[in-house]
Length: 360
Image 1 (tube, helix red, strand yellow):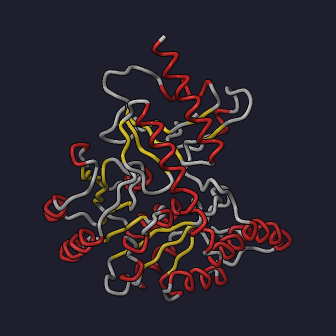
Image 2 (image 1 turned 90 degrees about the vertical axis):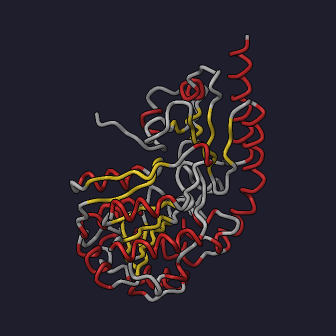
C-alpha cells in the first residue's frame, strides 16, 4: 500500500479506531457545507446522464463575478491539487523553488515532472516567517517556477503583500512564474490585506490558486481554480488536463459556493473564539503555539517531553496531523484543525487526560 502523507485519512483509521472518529487532521470549515451548496450538488445529479461542461462556463462566470476578474483569467480543475500538477505538466519547469516547510504537493508535482527542487528554508528562530533573504536565493537559483502558500500550510504564517511585490519584481527579472496558493486565504480576518487577486493584471507572471474545498467543506467534491492574466499560460494549463476533470455535481456546488459570500463572514466570526480556546489550551499544556490566523493551529511539543502524541490521541478516536514528514520539521511538530465548540472542548479534555496520565 502506498504511503499516505496528508491529513484527512479517516479510511485507514476506521480499521483501527472503535467508535466515532474526530478528524482534526484535515483543515475543513467546522460549520460544514452550506445548505445552498448541498442542494445544488444534489439537484444536479439528474444531469449526470450527460458529460460535464468541459469549459465549466456557468461555474467560471460565477467565479469571475466573485473575484472581480475576466472569465479568461480562470481555469477550473479537480481541486487545487489537480491544478498544481497541470501547471507543472503544462510548463515543464526544469527547476522549481518551494518553501520548507510547506504543502507537499508542490514538490511532489515538480519531482514527478523530473524538475529539480530548491528549498527556501524557513527558520523557527524567525517563527517560520518568510523574509527578504528569498530574493537573493531567487537571483542565485533562477527557478522557472516558485510556489508560495499564503497563509502557509502547516505553519499558518502569512506573507506581507510588500514582500510579495518584491518577490514578483525579482521573479520578473529572472523569468520565474510565481504561483501563490490562497486556498486558506478566505479564513483570514483581514484577507483583503493579503490576497493578490487585485494585482493579476499588473503581473502576468503571477498565478493564484484557490479552492472551495476548505471554506465550503467539500473536499469530497474536488473543485479548485486558478487565476492568471497570462492567456498563454491559461491555455497551456487547460490543455494539460482531461476534458471532464470537473464533474457536474462539483460544478453545481462550486457555482452555488461562489455566490454565497455570507458563509465566509459567518465562518470567520465563529473561528475567532475557537482558535483562542484551542491555542490557550495547548499553551496551558506547555506546548509552543504559533499564533493561528486561519482555521488550523501549528504547535510543538516541548523538547523535554517524550510522548507519541499522535498515537495517544488516536487511541481516543482523535486524528491529528503529525508534521514529521515536512522538510525541516520532525516528530515534535503538529497541526490541528479548528473544529466546532463541542469538538474542540473534547480535544482539550483528551489532551489534559493524556498529560495527566503521563505525569502519574
